[in-house]
Length: 424
Image (cartoon, helix red, strand yellow):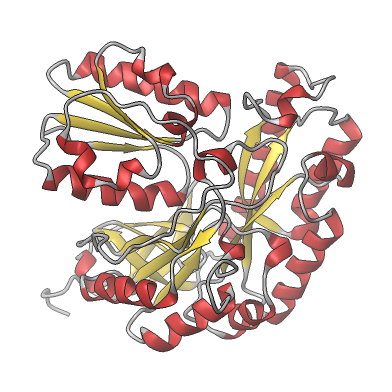
């Protein structure tokens, strides 16, 4: 069997779904099938998916290839026309195990905005032998950012009921998971479609109370304008919520934010970071940022660069603007030249690397609790990657280490515990 039978592109929600797909393919007995769980956030993302499809077909001519997920949902014909692709499934169909039993080719149209598909994870597989797990709490989005096509690929916002989430997470913890990441397309909108309209803060409170054996809880990317009061209070007071928050900011200039149809302005992002850090000083923030959005002037881009310092961002996820067919942003005139978009994205990444190095330097000599993912690798509560100078058994879970060095992208550390079973 190929080592990576399901290839994942894109967001943490896709990571959760890829785990489910991997399980469904095994249940279907499809050792002959390679699945690509695709992303369609930009035209470039879709191009990379097609490139991967052709690579797999070339490297594994004896295998069948399926393309599923967002890119397959929005543009199925671009994959059905590739010789050798045997299955194309949209986002709803990709989680239906029966689909992987068929040998034909199925193309699926986009979900319309009027459709509401309920979410049910009662039967979802609780992955084993993983210290960290992504859990889908919500899917879809009710907003229409001008650069984004995901609302068409994922449909309207809908949430998984709290009781189902608690049941699924308890199974994960029983199987050895010690770090759960709450994932979705717009998780700050969690609960707005449920009968009693619980908030994200309500869900987090129920998880902390109902699953006392879960030591670490994280959130995937979140919209800064919709954080409810209860969640913010829990974030600054509960040590089991990890001190790392990734914000969907996109830009630092108000006019560009308005042209993106974002629901926040620059000041709201700066104020949120200051408010949360005042309550919990060890908090670190990451952010998604787009460089070279149409009509972005040099001065507008400078305000995005300044936002990195003003918000105290540590981890940057930078995209040079890539128009997505069918979105309003793709029709805005006077687009920034491609080479300039790449230059601006590089400048942001350089600044992000400096911010990360400064953060890593602040941890030098400190003792950190890391969650082991492999014998020589783990992450701090701040999600900083740590490489161990000597191996430990991952079954030891969360262990203390002393930070002794750093490189461009990770920290180095020596364990303060011995390998389980060795002499002290």
